[in-house]
Image (cartoon, rainbow, N blue to C red):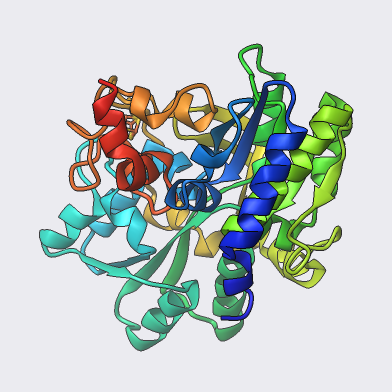
Length: 367
Ligand code: SF4
């Protein structure tokens, strides 16, 4: 299949792996930011093909994992109200809130529906004028334009029974926080290809210059990631700190300007809390005041509630590249995809779910 087979070619992969072995002469810690990239790395065993000098750690780029507990609690509260239909991506249904999750609300008779596109939620609102339809709009910069589009369209159509529960977060402020931390170990980053498709990569140029750290915008197939790692190793060995683009078939330096224009008509930058990390200034989007009528938090008056994470879950360390999922004492025992304690075990982009799928036997053998 075009754009898949050629990026999974084992002969080419072996050649790139050999080149990484040749180039890496000192220890380097490299972080892939996006959870989709984590899953490819684990699924194809790329971490096991690398020389001992190159250590991969996993970043905060799993939207489900960083959605704060308070927002899950709000989604549960809204979905439990009479006359409400809550529409969400499937992953969010199993993310544990403080006392319940959206699956349990659905099991108890709540109208919780799974969608593959936010436009599905708009259709549900059109077809059910007697119900108040809420779309659970989570994600990074990648999904923000489509979510913004639903509100823009709803306003144009005069749909009054549609709103968004917004929990959008932005990658660069989180990476800035990580790089500014005294505990940071990461020396080079694979930047998220989908986010950069929308946003371009000028924001990463600022980070590279400020912290003297290289970035390579990477794709999601095995050869994309191997090539991105090779490009990073070359930069690190040569003492360069530039932004390079491996994912040229999707990403340009300027990104998708039309998508951003529409997105910023609807959203504005705001402080956001990240699950396991805390509040990061300017790290998310909220609806602009002129779209307040579509803001589910205002429409339903759900208050912000402080909520405590399960003490055993070390997701904050995993999301900052300071620990691996198998370091968690609950991994694979008290925390599994069927009975998750933390969000990284739920999401199809979560690092704990990736280790559970592809590494749990090795993790068990080392205990
Ligand atoms: S294995 Fe479960 S409890 Fe441990 S860090 Fe991952 S999500 Fe949290």
